[in-house]
Image 1 (cartoon, rainbow, N blue to C red):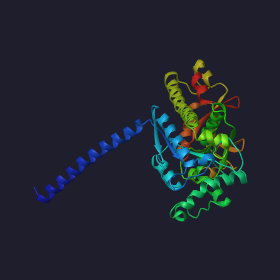
Image 2: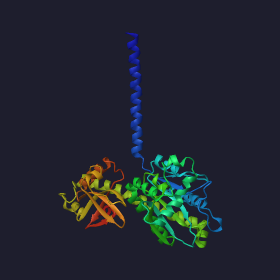
Image 3: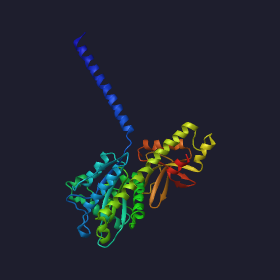
Image 4: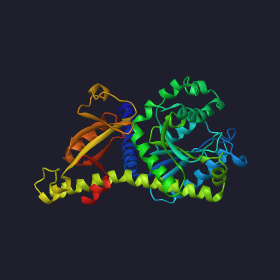
Length: 383
């Protein structure tokens, strides 16, 4: 045989073996990824290192209290099955806002929670939770401005943040748009956390608010920023700076994160259970030939929520990546955008996949009974 041809055949065989090995490796890697069932939570202790944050009663520093609470929250969550915790910092070091977002995005996190403490020149008190959004008033802008000003301590911040000016309201408005896809889920978590502060900890409830925080803008997942309380208030500052106060806040925040995860997971559980029912009974919404099964969906309408935000957008296909049949509802100060309106669960699943294929990766199915939104777990009980 021609030596050159022989060498060529050897190279082909070598490459074939490598290709088979690579495909097996790729298949196994994909299998591992498919089987991965972790909910990744990134915990962010505000400030740190050369940035002490706010200074309160008895010289308490925001950076120290935030870190202690974050480490306690993380410790509780790490004991939960299928929750993976990642920290932006675990010691007293300076981490810039850009890096905090990069850590969360690199981890492909499902949730980003940033913990802070508040301050004021009065004896103001109470807890509040923030999501990213256009500041509703001057006061909200000032809160965001205070947290965003840390970027001035960073090296090359003009390049990192592409001309962002923490002192400019226009800059703050501009950064809110990219996170609006996750706004509804962020508000869901923030509402759960605030309810815990008010009911479990008996703190003054300052509500869920929106403002343009750079650290939230940097993340591509549901994200909240918690202001646990005012260090400048004598009573509240002392409470936050105590072991018992930090323990109570840690327990409340961690339990509410777990509650949020359970609520989000139920959406997947319902999909699985209804799919099983369809397979076993021929169920197809209210059109099923099995009358007992079809009663599950009497008076229930399914929709796919694809977006939520403070901007009122015309429901034209060119505004929603070519999708038609978009409806807009206003809930409080938030506009919610839905695709589809059907009692046929098979149909809504198809629309859900269509929305995701168009880039709405965080879209999810919601249900309404007699025009009132109902929790997914209620459908699970009925099914």
